[in-house]
Image (cartoon, rainbow, N blue to C red; front, top):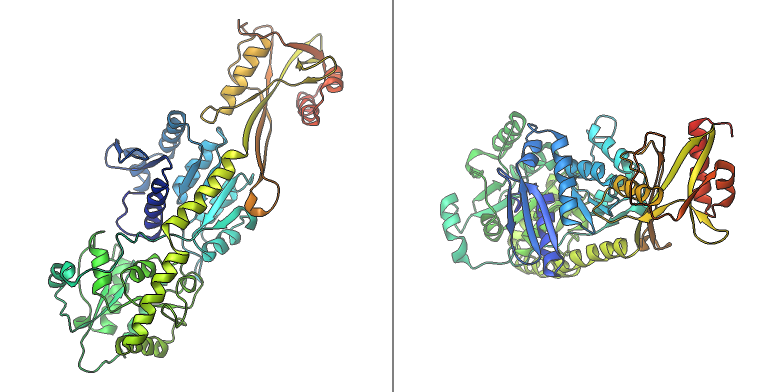
Length: 514
């Protein structure tokens, strides 16, 4: 994604999260797309790396393999403690690469929840979660209960999802003096005595623009003209038709035409508006509602999961059922005419932002999850080194004591591939040069986070098998702490049950009788 984002709830969520993490002096490297490759060091705690290859992937002109190679190189270079991805492409690339590293991987899910025309059967994107969640090694963060429900519907286990509400940057989205909005007001030709209704959303069918148009076409406030701004601009024929139908129902004279609004203009728009609407059929949360609240603009939304996690009906705004044009009209009129109610909504909204949608809370909860993953995370790589001698299978075991043996094992560094560690183990323990394993015997990931109220542990362990033959070149790196044992003796001698299972698995794969 581009950073800083121009618009979009998921992009804004990321920007505010990074702002909170950096504010807590957490070293963060953001890997994002760009027209050209570049590195920008913002301060001591934030570095932004932009890559053309990622930009090409987003525009469907690039190869996914380039993104995989890019991320693998960055993990080697940065040696991160945590990998955190957002959106589908990043999460897919992240999980593919991370199978070789095993870094604690967090995914924030910001795709809008399914509604009546969308389900896992006809939306192939949902199968992505089946892949990512296959070994339950990834932890998901949902910015709302609506997003969590969406993840569960697509097969993610509930105990692997934590809801962390987004924070709002109050330095940006705040009340402004009238003079700050004057130039934008003149640009859009809006008089101060006109009622400005802001519909802050992209132009999509599920955003409920038909419902809003139907309601506002029947709205009348004596001696006041009504003006409407839909912040999104159409980017397809379908979106042009949606906007055209909206204008036709509401009336051309009420709808203000415009280009794309930038980040500096959006807070001014909220300050100019008398009401902000978000009347979607389905919504992940509604970042635009939070932004409006921060700017002291009353809000109205539909009573659907996501939006009703933001608006407390009749306290911080009004909720109405989708399609209830009478309720929507009454709500608009009451906010316009009742100054006491309006001020109460604004005051209660500010308290809600501090108690539930704070960037400090957002950052703190993420850091808590990160620390739990890092503090209780261990990476071990085990190797089964074997040879076939006189038709007998022999296993290399490491002597721990007089009667205690184990398979060669080593702790893996976070920015080193599992396979690299395994190759290094074999060289040190056997005195032979090897390059690639013959088999991957197992990948065990046991993951339990403290938020599940169970054991605090995460253990990553991968077992590889390497054959030593007459043609395997020798190395000078042997530590000579290991010895070769015939299969049955190796099974008898190794102390660990997991080691026994690994040796037995190899024996079955080789289909050897002894």
